[in-house]
Image (cartoon, rainbow, N blue to C red; front, side, top):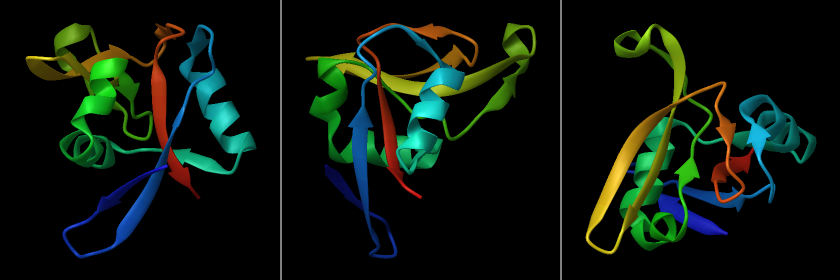
Length: 111
């Protein structure tokens, strides 16, 4: 369990969910729903990365709670994910219909 304190002082608790296999975004969302969780938004994902940057260095973390149309990539529905290495961090967009690798984890919180 990971905690992030918002600017207003509210503590939000997050969990990292791994399916341990390749999975579509729809499969991940169904798994979260079945376990009483909701996916993190981009704001929550960035706050998590700021507060727990070493976690995403181990394996990428996606936040499926925010989607938008990426006009630069043929209007693909996109979702954010973060990751990095010892000397850098990144925030990328992935196609929502992407098949997530088994190393990906998904940031979630209770409903």
